[in-house]
Image (cartoon, rainbow over all chains, first blue to last red; front, side):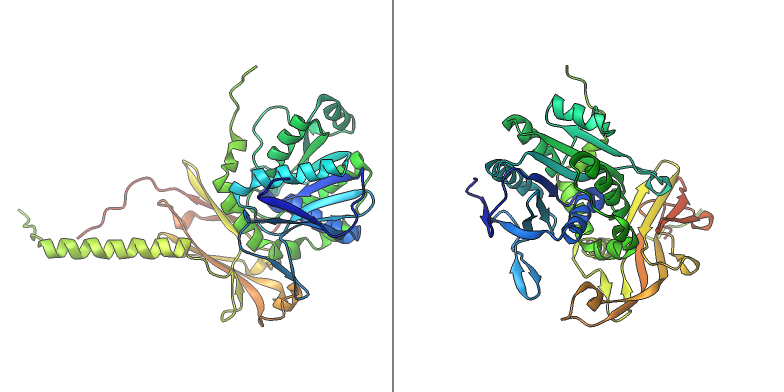
Length: 248
Length: 147
C-alpha cells in the first residue's frame, strides 16, 4: 500500500468479491450508479480511504465525519465510490492503492463504471454501453454478453489507471462506459450502465427509482458535476475525442 | 477635412486602467467561487455550457424540474444571455438533508456571456430531456468602438 494513500478497514472484508468503482467523471455516471446500488442493495461501509493527496475536506452524514472516498460492500460486492471530485494529480496513487487493496482481498474482477460523452445525447433514447477489458479472455466474455467493444481511442481518468494497472498486475478488469452528457449529470446513462452490469456480473439492481428520481438527482449533483468539470479539464479529458495515431 | 482631437497621455492612461478594471471584474466573475443558489432571490443556478462553431454559438443549460412554458431566454445587450425558468416544484435545503441552512427555491436563473459576436434576433430555442439548447447564428466581423 502506498505511503500517501491508506485504506482503513472498518469491518471484515469478504474475499473473492467483485470490486466496482464509481468515481466522478463525465455525466457522473459511475457515482450516480454507485449511489443507487448502495441504496438498492443496502450495502454498508466496510472501509475508507485516507490520503493527504485529497483536499482538506470531510463529508458529514448525520453529524459524523466520513472520508469522501469510501468502500461499501456485502458478501459478493465491494464498491469504491467518491463523493467529491478527485484531484487530477491524486488519481494515479489513489487508483493504484485501491486496486492493490482489491487484489489483497482476492477480488475476482474489477469493474469501473463510467461514461462516454456523445454530442447529440438529447436525441438518443436507447443509450449504448461500451466496454474495454484488461485481457483478451475478459474482452471476449463481455463481447459474448453483447457489450460493444471500444476498439480504438484514448481513455482518460480513474478508469484508465485502473485498467492499465490491472492489465499490468494480471487482474481481470472491465471498464463499462455508457453514452452520456459530458457536462451534465446523467441518471439515464447510469441506469443503462447498471442494466449491462447485471448481464455481466449477475448483480441485479432495479433502476426504476433511479429513473423516477432523475430530475432530483440532476439538481442535487450540480455542484459535484461543476467541480468534476474543473478536474476533467486538468486531466485533459477531451483527449478522448482525439483520433489516435496508429502504432502497431 | 475632419479635425481629430488629440488625446492627452492622461486620457490614454485613464482609459487603460478603465479597461483593466473591466477585465478584472470579468475575471473575478469567472473565477471567484460562489454558491450555486441564491437565498434572497430563491433561485438555483443551472449548469451550462457553450460551444462555438464557425457558423453558430450553441448554449446549453440543464434545467431540472423546469416548467417548459416558463423557460425564457433574454439578451442583455450584445454579449450576455439571461436564462430563467420556473420549477414545477419548490425545492428546500431540507430536501437534500441540509438543516443548517433555510431557504426554498422555485426558479432557475443564470446569465451567460457569449464570447463572440452573434445575432441575438435570430436566436432559436429547443428544450429536450430537460436540456435547453440555444442556437445563435454568428456575426462575422469586429466590434470597433467609435469615439
